[in-house]
Length: 456
Image (tube, rainbow, N blue to C red; front, top):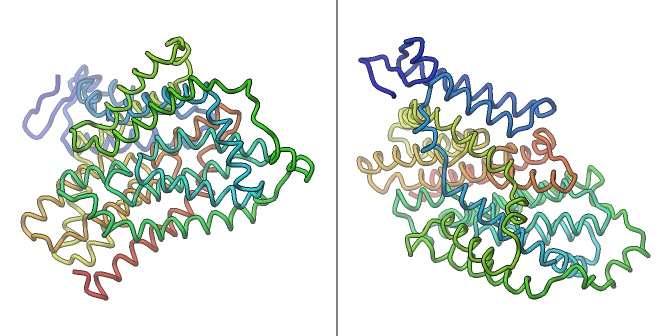
């Protein structure tokens, strides 16, 4: 077991076995080193699957002893795991009912077969859904539909899938319930749904539109907005009827009803004291009970590699948190800010975006939020803009890399299951430019509003 020994401390594992006592600063450095090692393996996905990379990282922090098994288990965000697991089950049953085939057929007619319309309509829908659901639920729902449509129109689904992921992260930035960092900020800072609509939504909306224009330009340049289907094939697709053999309408009614009830519970759940993960787990169980499908079959369809990847990564990031790395980062930010709120907007916003692009933004936002809460006790409401800067940076920064947000990894795994590989650098080709441009525009405009036009 871990115990402090003066300035030095032993956590467990090999450090304890060999009676090695490290200071908290040394443990923090070792945690960072192991995180960088894990991250390097994730980058080298040609040689290591990202789930194996995360498991190796998690195993090392435990075996070496920079975090105890108890603390590692606590570091796993159960709400995220329950949410992923529950929604994966619900979406699996919806898929079995033929719901996504039906939606794809209707959507193709709406787009009239135009790849540009597919990009814009589905990005807009995804951003809208993400503002009122969580990002993960949205992409679990939208990704299968997008793959179906792209295949019907003979388009490469990969850039379209990345486009809806980027839209889900920017759309989720707009509201209190759209992204986990906002939920954390709302809870710790005592901010309401309307506060986010007034202070964050305008910048998130602008970021989404700019990001979509950038994505459109990159896809057009890559030749992905040209239809591959012939006019005859297109006419057949647009006029074709849905294959009824693919549909189980009774199961569809059950699964869609459960899905809609789940959405409503997500929206009102905060007032009921229910976490989204608990709601998803409960409703998935209800659907499994009434669907008539084999539980074994449903569970086989769960993206276990995704769940285990997140569990491993949470443990590696947990070592950073337990050993004070986030606390140090937050304290450095506060030292740099001093009492200059305008400078603080830039530092908090850009630092949050950078960190959130490479580590899970939930523990960082949690650490930063408590530091800002302490700062608020001394300075009062004058530092309110720092909360909104944290929100914009932590949420929009998730588009930087494939591991910057849960939705990114989930979509990549759905794509892989359908035979399409979205690797780390393929995602960055689109995600990084969109993230950089949207973060810079949103944070700078927010800064200008307050520093130049006296928003505070």
